[in-house]
Amino acid sequence: MQASGQAFQDLYPEELSHCYGCGSHNKDGHQLKSYWDGEQTVARFTPQAFHTAIPGYVYGGLIASLIDCHGTGTAAAAAYRAQGRAMGSLPAIRFVTASLKVDYLAPTPMGVELKLRGIPVEVKERKVIVEITVLAGDTVCARGQVIAVKMPDSMLPG
Image (tube, rainbow, N blue to C red; front, side, top):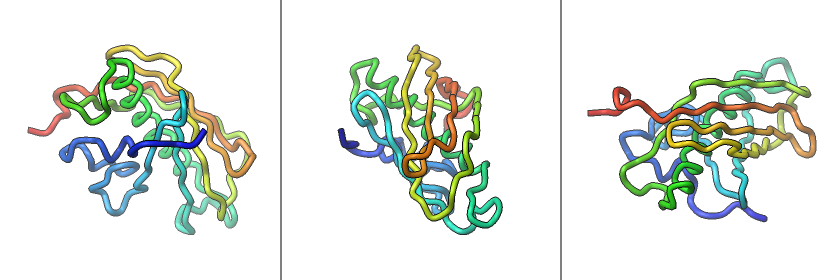
């Protein structure tokens, strides 16, 4: 099944679109875009030369940040879906990371598009747990888990 629809991050409210990993208003960030693909989510990212750990391999911090942002995006999308609402409808539902766990399973090569696959494994009103797999081609390079919590009102602009 192919990913479809508009990217989750493109449906975030303007005032909440500044994230380094996925914010459309952060021109220096990753600009990660996540989509539904059936009951899973998918995002793709091609590391650049400045994402190098050692020649030929991707810096692990990049992998962690991609898992983080794909996880919180998946959490928001899953929460909208659980409420039977269109993503982007108001009031906005946004999540922040409460916990990030990453297991590095194989060196991640440079020059290969990375695919992130997310599965929301627990969806509650204020907390969503997402499991994410990072692949370079057919090789599973990392697995992660994001525990995302609903963004507290104190973080909202205004």
